[in-house]
Length: 347
Image (cartoon, rainbow, N blue to C red):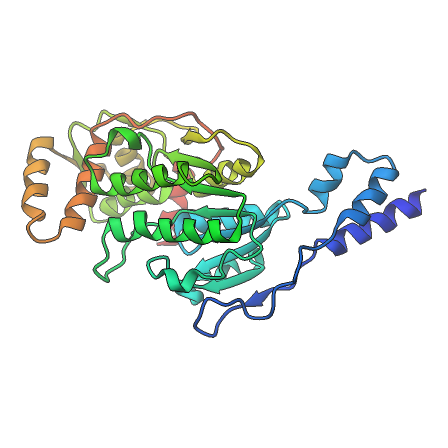
């Protein structure tokens, strides 16, 4: 019985192994033909069930889980999500327009496909044989004249339509905490307008709305390095930011029947002034904090819109965040102090 059990496990592991195929030839077609059908893992699973193992445990161990497309894997959150999916045995395909930016994720990816969400003709085959699409696609520091509407809304709509054509089962999307109440901000409206498209699509979905990333909090450390941190308002509003690895766990959990919408935050709640003080303390510097009145920031934003609407909207978003409480149900265990110390030691 023991030998039969071990044999079944070996078959099971073999059935869930994958060969990494890289798409590097400048188009969205996956290099190497995809198999005509999904791998048949039913035989080893049946063998293990016959040996007395629960079927659910067998299916989980087989990686009979999902074939996942991660869009946004070159970003802060997307990289952690790809790693978490892979760690749980899923098949992970990443969509990117700059393939070299995924070099550090090689061990967490089974396939890479080239494509640009703002160019729907490049997305024709990216969702082929995919069960779940995850997207954290959005404008970060792109400098090609694209707007939030172009990327955060229309880019994700293009991806959703590709998912629908391919028969994808579920779409997991990351929006903004308190998004439905912040539609006066262009960046949030783009996200939430896509959420409405997703709800109407007929695809099973989950929308996660995190409070703020640790990577965003890194801006406080950058200001502290330069000797002074600027806060909007009095700095008394609270936030519980979340590490990308902790948020990734919630994102991947969404493949297993999480609610259609979920607010997510980290385990620690800070005022913005406390975050500034923590940044200085992590650098071993005395705290120098300057408070900028919210009314003054609104004037600055109004003036900035005449020159760069996108930058003005980003500033408006962070001004709104720093003058509001941004606290959601806590998950994870990463501490902001450890994150700051890690950044500080890295120089």
